[in-house]
Image 1 (cartoon, rainbow, N blue to C red):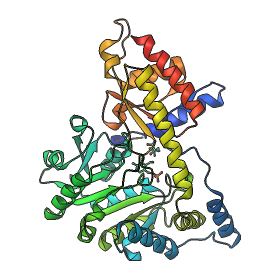
Image 2 (cartoon, rainbow, N blue to C red):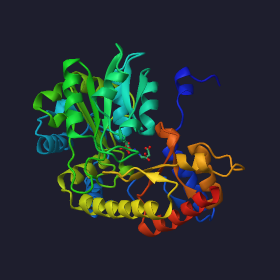
Image 3 (tube, rainbow, N blue to C red):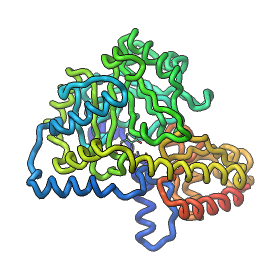
Image 4 (cartoon, rainbow, N blue to C red):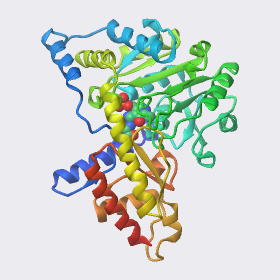
Amino acid sequence: MKLSCRASLIKPSATLAITAKAKKLKVEGKNVVSFGAGEPDFDTPDYIKNAVKNALDKGQTKYTPVSGIDELKAAIAEKFLGDYGVRYENSEIIVSCGGKHSLYNLFSAMLNDGDEIIIPSPYWVSYTEIIKLSGGVPVIADTSKNNFKFNLKLMEGALTAKTKGVILNSPSNPTGVLMDEKDTTDIANFAKKNGLYIITDDIYEKIIFDGKKFFNALMVDKSMKENTIAVNAVSKTYSMTGFRIGYTTGPKDLISAMNNIQSQSTSNPTTFAQYGALAALKGGYEFTVMMRDEFQKRRNYMLDFFDTNIKSMIPIKPDGAFYLFVDISKIFSNAKKEIKINSSTGFCDYLLDKYLVAAVPGIEFGNDNFIRLSYATGLDVIKEGLDRIKEAANSLL
Ligand code: PMP
Ligand code: GLU
């Protein structure tokens, strides 16, 4: 069939593809260690599961309002007031089928053909594709020469007359790096002055290490609400990736347009999953803190291991999330002549084919000198995987 131009512009999600490939190899009986998955390995807490069971028992199996049940929107408003000191009405909130769907609806509602969105690189794989699907143009601002920290200067370098907004994702997928409070403040003030929108993707906001603090554009001052669009989800915070519940807050007219789009595509997000999300948002952060502390232990183990055992691979120290972005360019420059590995994809293929270790090539996140390792997997698996990576790296030098 002759497909639409839009469909042919889009590539499949590499993170999902690699996770699926690793799972398939495991089912075939191969002893694969997967650093692919971008989802917490912890079971969803019982109080959340029980809320879903109760909802089902009570007959919550029918349509809800398109933008989600009022109680859930009220709980989201309460979270925004508590966390950022900013007040939202239900009409400024829409619940969608996961953070990814929130972003899809958002860009469908805000972009005309040719409108540009600045994306700090390295970036999460789906930003560029979702923007292209909406007719927009992703404009990449490389942070690699600034310790992977985005700032106003980098933003100004990417600006054109067509810029409509910028995505801030802190801590970042894939680097785990947190933005500095001052940089966020400068960018927020600049955006406000110049009529640009900040899309703050706060999906990893509760997974931050070493006692560091989260800070987004809404926290600069209350007036930032006008041109800030916040996207979030229960997926990572409560280990609820399969529930597919995300949410967006923003200007009323934008939320209303997203509502129209959602009403003609998915209708409401799954009814009983919304009751699970409600219980999650009301239930505090005890579970999240336990998960965060565990991620921090794994991060520390991995950083130590690379430092001591794999000198040819250099990770960026993450402040949060659960990914390690590792520089492999030394391997390219020092590899044995007969070995022709000179791309992140080549290295990941080598890791999987020869050592049964799944990792995501950095090129998918906009930087071919890196690979991404997700440590959302148990420490024993991490230890085994790192031993294999060490062997692989040594075999190339
Ligand atoms: N933003 C970022 C940065 C992510 O890593 C993810 C992970 N999938 C999402 C948004 C979307 O999450 P979900 O659709 O699973 O809620
Ligand atoms: N965000 C996660 C990741 O980066 C989950 C997979 C996806 O949606 O991309 O791996």
